Each structure stands twice: as structure tokens, then as C-alpha cells.
Image 1 (cartoon, rainbow, N blue to C red):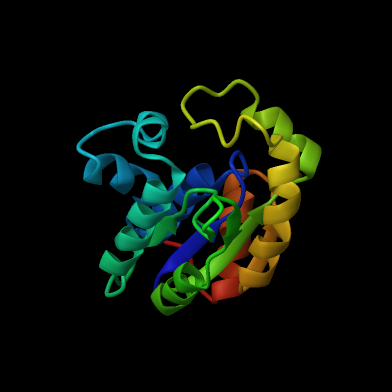
Image 2 (image 1 turned 120 degrees about the horizontal axis):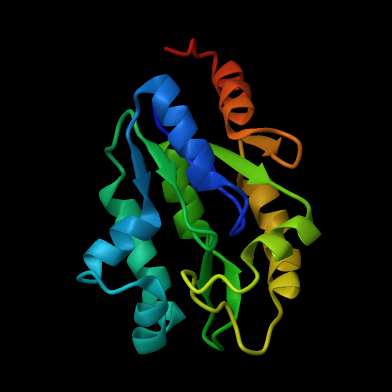
Length: 178
């Protein structure tokens, strides 16, 4: 059994995964960390700048393929994991990635309010610029319904600590924490 976290940048996926890992002793696997490793240590913003978003989305897909037989992990997914690019370069929902994620484990959508998410990622140079033309707000408005649709379980983190969030997830899964 694997637990998969999806959600927007700044939702708290990494913090909740680490908290849940302490309670379950499942290791945390980050798609973004694997992407940096697979790209030869090149940070994601530099990889995207050099190779483009389409290449990055393909890299994510290959990472998910490699994780198909994983068992007992917490998968912390990058915010765009559920998306690919169409021929015109527009972001579109990725059925192939969603199918892989569903075959890998139980999908937990960690959500926060739109304004809260926008505030959390302002000026964060550790994350690649999503778009020069499109605002983060517009991107979120398109992505949030896709996250909702993909999830087996949704949890709003606006008023929860990472420890409380981990407990809610354990309850939902029927786990007893260690």
C-alpha cells in the first residue's frame, strides 16, 4: 500500500508527508527530488529553462512508470503531476499519469484556499516559473478541479497542523500510528 499526495505548490505536501512518514515508518519519495536526480542534479527551474515543460512532464511520467511496483511508500508529487502539454503547449489533464498514480496507491489531495496558496509561493525562487503569460491564480483555477477529481480523499490544511493532517489520513486509511 502506497500513499500519494497531490495538490498545488505550497499546499503542504512535503511537510505532511514527512509527518506521516514518522508515524508509519514509510519512506517519503518525492517526484521532484527524483526528477533532479534523473536530470543529473540539475535543479528543476534550470531543467525547465533548458529543456522546456514538455520534457519535464515526460520525465515525471517516466518516474511514475518506475514506481509502479513500489510498496510501502509515501509519494510526494510535484504540483503539476496530473498534467501534460497538448500540441499547442497548453497544460491539459493527463489521463496516463492519473492511471499510473491510481495503480500505484491511494491519492490524497491536500488543499488550501486559493489566496493562501498564492501567498505561500510568491517569490519562491526554488520553484520554476509556471508561466510568464499566465498568472498562478489562473493556473490554480484550472488545476484545482483536476486535483479534486483525481483524489480518493481530500483534506483541507488551512486550519490543521501537519501532525493533525497526518492523523486524519491515518484514520481515513484505517492505520494505527506507531
